[in-house]
Length: 144
Image (cartoon, rainbow, N blue to C red):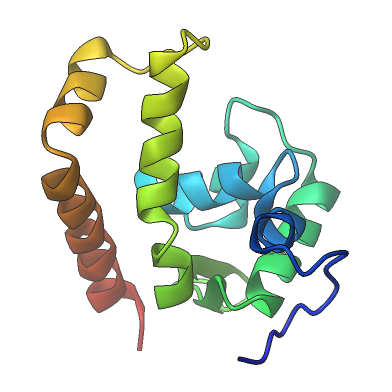
């Protein structure tokens, strides 16, 4: 299988995955697209983690090159883009969900409401399906 981002340092699948999504910001950008409905550059830039605009721009370019994210023209302002997860990007949903639960299991600082974590834990598949439905609904409205 060809890899559009053939810059890995190793043949190990874990190392290769980390080469693509393992820096400080990439999974947070994916999280914003996936869970928080942030599709505009400005919206992602305003996330509480405080990503710098040049880093966000770089991460979006890398995610687009890796075919995890795609962009389309904003319907009301053609100079802006709306970013969205591709099917390849959506395949990261279960991984992000497991990271949420792992962080909670190990007492990592979390502002996620405990009832939300409990729901995810008890209804994991339903939660993944809800995310997929929400993303599909957004795409029906915003994509040509």
